[in-house]
Amino acid sequence: MHKFKFGEVVKDKITGERGCVMVRAYYYTGCIHYGFIPEGRDKDGKVKEWEWHDEVRLESVPGATEIKLDSRTETEIYYQVLQPKGSVM
Image 1 (cartoon, rainbow, N blue to C red):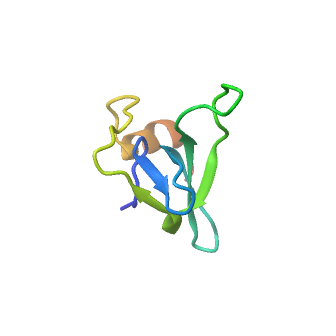
Image 2 (cartoon, rainbow, N blue to C red; image 1 turned 60 degrees about the vertical axis):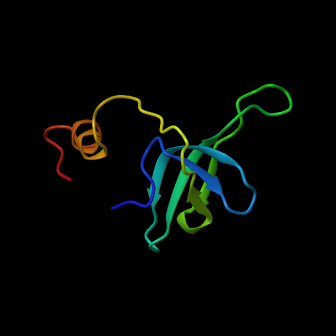
């Protein structure tokens, strides 16, 4: 089981930056990083750049609205999108 779900709002324990989890990366060394899009805009009014942090640096934001893109579960997305029919993995 993963610590954070896709679409879940997380907060960086160090900077306080909050955002929506969009990517999970597994490294050969065993580290798990999450990529999220920070809330709000930068000083020029542009969407902020993605942030990538180690799992232990993030915490869930209780009561925050989870972002839902569609009704599929993470497992369904993995098998339907990331592992198309005929894939050897």
